[in-house]
Image (cartoon, rainbow, N blue to C red; front, side, top):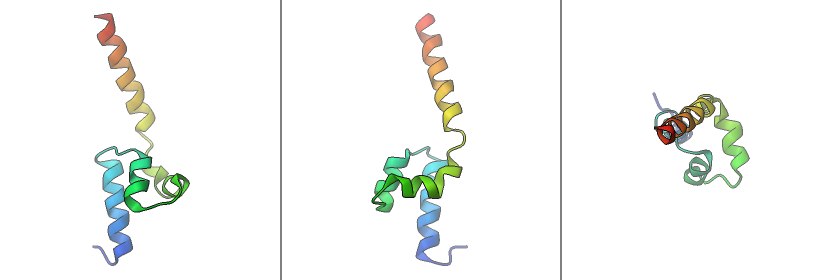
Length: 67
């Protein structure tokens, strides 16, 4: 349950990252963070799969080029 505007902001950012895979710079912009470091230090725990997803996408591109 949301208890404050801060909770709503945090939920919004978390959904953008975990469900939509939105890049940190876009999340920072939406939240009005002056520095991307603020966004990354607050929400970096939600990006653990991003490296794996990137590697998978690159692998698919290479496979497509080979065929």
